[in-house]
Every structure is written in structure tokens, then in C-alpha cells.
Image (cartoon, rainbow, N blue to C red; front, side, top):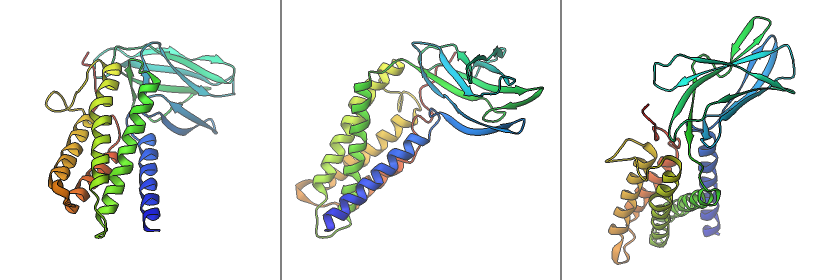
Length: 261
């Protein structure tokens, strides 16, 4: 019964982390609602796109009297803002952001107009979209599954370390192995596909995803060293488990790869 409860809690923690990662971070779509001429408009605007094509930006608006403008420029530049009228395609207003080199970013706004009354979706501050090279879907899926499997075993290692009657070392080894495979083998391969660089954390850059992976791995190495010769090393395992949970609470891709134009 105790093992069932432990696995249930570990699965809940892992799924909660997965949902949190899905809904946060600077590259996930900006979702919300805006009001224009008394009507509520829902939107989902992209903040990440593959650079094998221009990025479509669309808003569902049935009223043909409503028009829109897409305003954009390269991120962190003094470029003049480009204004592009949105085209009506049935019940949608559609515009295209020009594709950029890998890790290139655009700042943009979507402005809607109804008889002279305007509203800027997602507020007055521009959204930022980052472009990346296409990544093979199979590789991306395996990378994500391995990373969350490492989270599952990290949670189990921490939960087991709280039980004086159980030794968490087997779970710690599994968590460390999966974390290394996902964060230091599959992760760099994915990043090479997307941004043409294997590693952009310390000592080469400030990519927070790479750096938090490095820190968590250091905790797991310390836990494995402390637990050699069969010792439980509960304190170290708990610290490594907590560190892993904390890094999953940091939004993915924060301070990620960025092209300097």
C-alpha cells in the first residue's frame, strides 16, 4: 500500500510539472481575451515558430467590419516598425511574420480596428516570437519522455528517502541516468537541430535551461557519490530530488538562445 501511494504521489508531481511546463515560458502561445466594440475576442498568438516558412498569425473574428494590422520589427534593434494589413479569410483575420534565422526573434503586435476604435491584443507591450529550425518529431518526443521519466524517478527517490525503512539508491541511479540521457545527450542534439548549437549554458552562455540542467546534474552526481557502497545518503537524495523539482518550476526556454542581429 505504501509503495502504491508513493508511486501515485510521484506520478501526480510529474504530471503537474508537465502541465506547468506546457502552460508557462516565453515560447508558449500568448492566450487571452480582449474587448472590441463591446464584443469579446479570444486569441492565441504564437511566440515560437519553425523557420522553414513564414509564421501565420490569425485571430478568429466573424464581423467583416473589423480589420486588423500586424506591426513587427526585429527584436532588440532600432529597425522601423513594419505594418502589414491582416487579410480576411472567412471568419479569420490572417497575417504572416517573415521567417528569421535560427534563434532570430521578432517583436510584434496585433491591432484590431472596429470603426476607428482600436485594441492591441495581449496589451501594448509587443510579444516576442523566436524562430528555430525544424526538429524531428520523434527526437523531440523521446527527449520530452526521457526528461519527464527522470522527473518521475527523481520524485520517487525523494519520497523513498523520507522512509527510513527503504533505500532510495536504486531510484536515484535511475533518475540520474535518465536525467543525463535527456539533458546532456538528447537535449544538446535537439538544440543543435533547432539553433545550430549543442550547448549554450555555462561556460559558453547564459541559457537558463542548460544551466539549470547542469546544476541539477551536479546534485545527482553528489547524491550518487555520497551513496556509494550501499549507503542511503538520504539527505543528498532529498536535495537532488528537490533541486530537480525546482528546475521544472523554472519556465522552459527562459533566457534561451537568441540571435544578435
